[in-house]
Length: 407
Image (cartoon, rainbow, N blue to C red; front, side, top):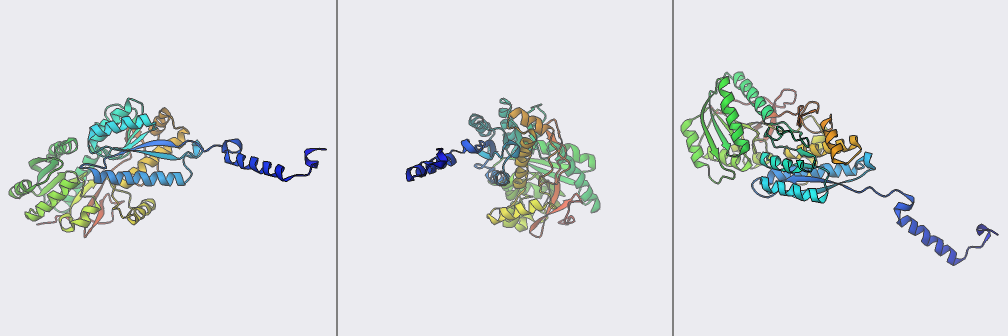
């Protein structure tokens, strides 16, 4: 008599049921174990002077990780999910570097973010000591990609291309309006970003017929810019070009409005507020007419429009930091898919050869050269009737420039 010929008693049935439950409870027995999550460092300044921008960047990364995981994770790695290891750079380069050291100890495979140039410089340098891939989101200083660090990749446009585009488009706008502007005052934050931009503008604008009448450095943060506004009212420049972060730009615009400083145009470059919907919503009169050459999402992208809807439904303003960081996380996920690996060296190789196209930005083909995405480019925006509109380049524009705005 075989086992199958025997009658099955109650005890036998219970034993068999318990064995089946035990088998199902041990996924490694009959089905493959779920792969371990892939730890990715997200570095943003969410406290201190840059907290607002850092919050926008963090939100973009969170949405991207959520979407990637819900779509099946990194499929080439068995559907491994991405686990965010967040670091608050606290608006200082020292804190950014410290957070990278902590992330290294926690076993991240790459770091994304930084926002400000000083933070991105320090953090990517710290990451390079461990061959830890670092994707810069916003930091525009070209020092970031001129150090020969093989681990560092900047997806967005850098200082050189942004300023060249800004100057070229300013010349076009001014010529199209009959050249109403000739004199320029530069107002810049006194750090790496603002000082470098002001220096370049002071060198290049005179080549196009503009006269620099003053360069005014201000600290970040600033509490009172009355003296700056009074100086501008005394100089009466045709153009004011601010290269400042959010708080200082808002303060400057409001103080200029109060002091009745009315240049023919305010033309910002990589500005913290001029392409920020919060500024436009809270101070529409002060923001009206301000132009900016900056990062901005592709207005044609349905994926960007859908992300904007989700972000605004959560009660948050949709600004460029969010789609840019969403895209940077997507770039990293694409690199891991193509490398079929979460090893740091393999990720670096895959990033270096990336042609990533499923992003939300108005860029050309992705191609990294010495760590810089040569397909990245800024656009020109202008605040018009309570909204931010794209005015250049024409293939992305949804409005024409209003210029001069005074006189």
